[in-house]
Image 1 (cartoon, rainbow, N blue to C red):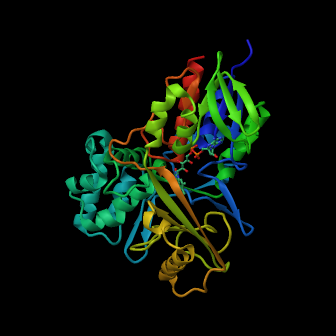
Image 2: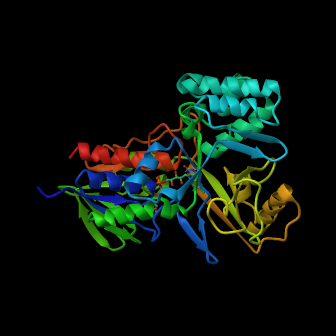
Image 3: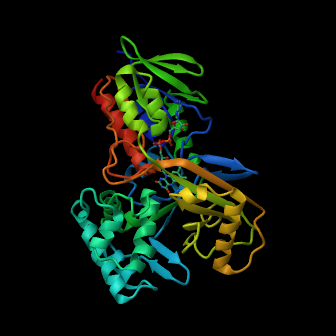
Length: 430
Ligand SMILES: Cc1cc2nc3c(=O)[nH]c(=O)nc-3n(C[C@H](O)[C@H](O)[C@H](O)COP(=O)(O)OP(=O)(O)OC[C@H]3O[C@@H](n4cnc5c(N)ncnc54)[C@H](O)[C@@H]3O)c2cc1C
């Protein structure tokens, strides 16, 4: 019997994961992406000779499926630098987890945190203890703000600890974020093993981290890789699916639609029976993320690889040199950046430059700056936000992507897990 021909639309982290799993399952895979650079919302961007990303990303030690996939496709072992859990707001809060087994590392980090009083540390510890049972700690329909209130978290602990972690992990502010998802992420990252809480900072650009090695791995196993090919519509045929692509029509036995939700809704909308599903997906709300790059003189360093900013436009500043990138390059991350996305780029970059100066005194202005806003970076992770299943109900058509049903917010781990799920769904129904 000849292997099933399966098309994967989208070479982001979800599509890549689906492709690898389907190849392992014996399928004949074709991977298509409209973009010439693989990686989707986690991809390399080149600017003025510098290698940047469309947005600074952080992974966690708890991202088991992403880490296993990177290993399986031969991604370089030094592609991620592990930093022990630490939060630095210079002059305000210093918290660092020592090398102890979980959850002692967290208890010690809170006990020795500088900038929190005894009551504040105790309250934070009580919450960290409660989230060991993530499902019970948060209530159905509860926002993170209500959850923190119910767990008596003092204002400083909310503002310096939980709220920044919430917006960084869920890309949704605490007043609107889903407490169940938040407590699940905290539970997985903080309470199981110490290594789960490690912050894994990419030393390579985001396309080189997983998509490029995966594409090389897939190519060696006969996968057809068609970057720069847009899929415009899907149509059911007697035995499978016809894809209308920018390179002409293609026929397959099955398809994984691994695009972002706003693109999935237009593809599914081309299939009459899937119009209701397409309409629900198109109603998914999104949150933006802005990254401001500032290229300083090569002697400029930040005090830590990742430094928190209090009361700024930026929430976190990353020293790209300390992460293995260009010298003097700083990346400022602004999650849920509705207000900043509306600002003129020069105005925003100048304001962030002043925030960098707060760390170490006056600096010469950056040589260049680059502001990248992803307006629909992630779905808004609000209580009860609907997420579609991998199974579309149409035979041989599965959905993958960070927005599909799963325990995590829109993250690389959610994307990879969704790709694996969609692939298994098709393999099981063959
Ligand atoms: C700025 C920013 C910062 C982030 N920070 C973090 C972080 O720190 N940690 C973390 O874990 N996650 C982070 N995320 C989230 C993470 O990047 C996403 O969850 C993940 O990349 C989504 O992957 P995906 O494969 O589901 O979708 P996508 O990456 O969107 O992939 C979809 C692919 O489909 C292709 N495509 C779409 N339509 C078509 C079509 N019609 N034909 C052919 N191809 C098509 C697109 O070109 C794209 O390559 C961040 C996201 C952004 C934008």
